[in-house]
Image 1 (cartoon, one colour):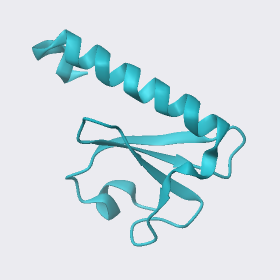
Image 2 (cartoon, one colour):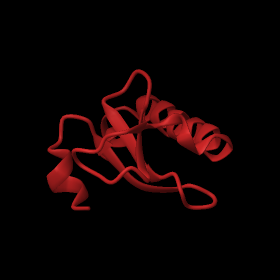
Image 3 (cartoon, rainbow, N blue to C red):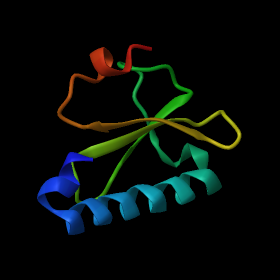
Image 4 (cartoon, rainbow, N blue to C red):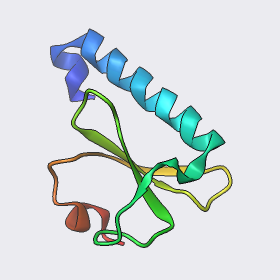
Length: 82
């Protein structure tokens, strides 16, 4: 991860936030937000608190599968290509 090259502590905090979110989403897959403009309803979006990143995951898979870790400012339809 490029973040670690500049700030190891920030990279570790981001990884911890992503892992914590993954555990929450495993327990309650529908917590994330459906955004029908870039993806079908089965795919959900979870914003990582305090960061500009999203987890994009398949809420209907068992267990849920994280498909992308993407910056929120990106053109999501182009990046996701669903």
